[in-house]
Image 1 (cartoon, rainbow, N blue to C red):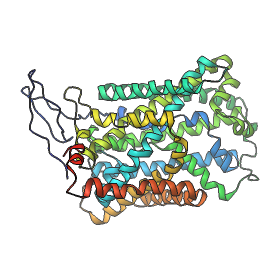
Image 2 (image 1 turned 90 degrees about the vertical axis):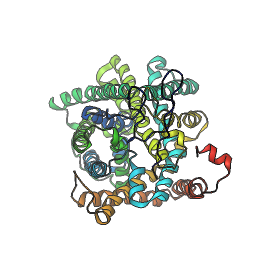
Image 3 (image 1 turned 90 degrees about the horizontal axis):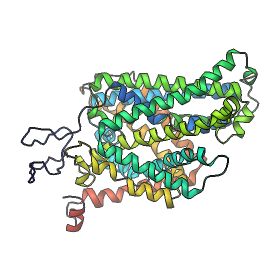
Image 4 (image 1 turned 30 degrees about the vertical axis):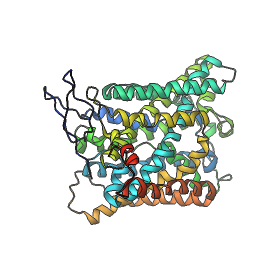
Length: 480
């Protein structure tokens, strides 16, 4: 189904005009230059992509969700550790898929290989029309809120100012990803180190207080008077959401240098660092703040900084904003490759698989979400939409890992340079499906709406992809 590139043409200046080029194909001009997405994702850049997209605003703002549903300090820390291990299981399963199916595109590509084009298109459709614009808008609004907070403290920030700052942030991310893969990766490395610095600003004083003997908040840490077994799945749901983002490197497989070595190693290192940081950050919070204070706080890191650092606490919102910016950058960088690959497979308009002849970036695939995301920022009820769609993420991720097990039996001879024990994908896929059923049980209305939105991908598939005799205006729109 992969479309081939058209013959090259040169303009009056001797440069190649824009053409659709597969990531595995090249387009040569008189100087034998290759127009392709090069292998520029090294181990350090891979680690920065994973860490930079996992660590967003959540660990700084509201870890209280896990505390609330787990019922005690000790159980909340166990949930953080368990979610880190489960996320590692998912990441290792994706590492096997990424080293045996050496195509970019992440979830979309693996579902396409295992279950065929119809299911893959439904995943793509849900991502394009709802999940990704809403997710990008939410993290971008958090960026706009926290980048302006030092300027307006202690007053409230006008909503329109937040939206304008958000628009500037989104625009700069789109511009950066359109101009240079190298600079996008360099900025991501810088932002990842900024996040780790912000977390260290919390961990170091918290550990200092702990070693001084400030342990009163850990007394009776496993007291289960407030714990309810029925709410524990919700605690795990919150924890798995906090760790989500470990799959983004798989969207860039064809751009990863030596993927057989780089992908598993980047995943191991990244998940170890993130789990270590998350657990120690929560320990630091509990060292300084009681469980009641954490549950009462709207932004735990800011409350922590006010208690520990006084006036210096003004830098915390800046670090939270940088953390959000890194998540925005990593998300756009990775997701654009899904749209690039889907266009290459013939399931999105042809223009999305074109590469800029000088900058070597998938310009159209990067910019496709820009107008929808901006519209969501200003007029959309994005938080409700995220509630509709949150369970779909785990449904399709569980389906991907189930596809790994399926491919073990249907394609046993497929080269697998990296192979995980079978219990790892089994445990992880069961966890994902459990969270999906939990969503159906706890919030059937919103979950049902989200499921219905995704099912609109079925008629869309037959209208835009399956039927061969489309109207000429539709063929022109799709680039046929």
